[in-house]
Amino acid sequence: MKFEVMPVVLYGIIFPFVIGLLLRLPKLLIEMRQNKHWTFDWIKFIAIAIPTLCVIAMAILPYTAAAEFIKIPLIMMEGTPIIQTITGIVLGYTLLDCLKK
Image (cartoon, rainbow, N blue to C red):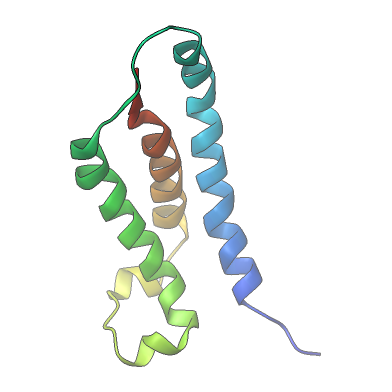
């Protein structure tokens, strides 16, 4: 038998991201009903979303060919997936939170 690790890793990253989106969705729907001008909070996106996206990318990199060239912190390669779960939830929530009315 052959076991593919990449689908399991992707599920472990995408699922918390979707949970983060769902946590912010009710407030976004309330904001959509208001008749205001939409904006995008670039500061929050740069300060929170991009670093969390980098942490999530470090969770995927050990299973790709880029692992030979990029040095990945040991804490990302060993241990529990709690870091990936927290950053996935934060990323999903922050992406919808960056949209402001």
